[in-house]
Image (cartoon, rainbow, N blue to C red):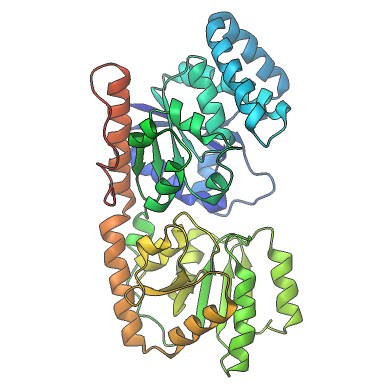
Length: 420
């Protein structure tokens, strides 16, 4: 079966899970075409695999405005009724969206390109990651006469603005919808039609052999912690700096590695300088997967004080490498981490609670941390192997295609999910 994977920006340093998913599907025999609206000129790719993916991806906006206009004209001649359906939906979405009207016009033109490219490649199903503008393009393409589409919804950027992102429409016209956690599924159920609830399926993000086959390294008896992820408000890294100040007042000076980059980098650096923590905190910037593994293995635990999450891949990676984790009771995290068994969970937004959890971790014997790490790895092997997740997705794709051809009936919600 030939699939078209469609993302707003691809590849990205923070979206390695999409690459893993695509390659796991290819290992199952799916032919996957990569489509994206744009690349990331402002973000250096550090993984060789991401550089390879960029060479295999077709970028719609790279072709320029004249090509978009040509595609609209060419597709209109072939499918004029489809244009009417897509344009009607575009106007409806634009009235309710937070984005300027001109951007929805561009989405309509992008839908024409996606329809033409996927038809020329023989794509049988389009899958969009994230419920934002890429999902809008896939929906408009479907109404214009393209193949069925599905989408994966991840986190707060989508459910924080469900009306402005018109998630109800995108789910209504989709063949099915994947969510990365039961929490995400529950958030989406609040905003869509009751009759569309059966379209929702929980399929987790997974880790591949680069983590699963990594050598076992005992938990080091050190005072080193690592936080992996984009430096952003959602990840709440400034709270870590505040927690380090509190811990210093208690006579504790753990080392902290912040592996990642993002819009809060300057703010974090300012806090480090203000509180004279340069000897404790290391900012790595974006690093490749090998460096991420090395940083996790060199640390006592991974800490992630997020204010909101779908289900963070960094936690999955750390647990795969048998490291305990310190995180918050938000989003899908409690579905993965059980307090006292795989690590610590605390209330979000509290530097004091974060400092308390870090202190407990620092004072916990290494043998107990190793037991937590072993429990975490067992949990990942049960729920988050990317090969298993790809099997679930593959069955969804095949059954959606069969239903579109009239040879099958739609599948019920959650039947392919361990947590469904």
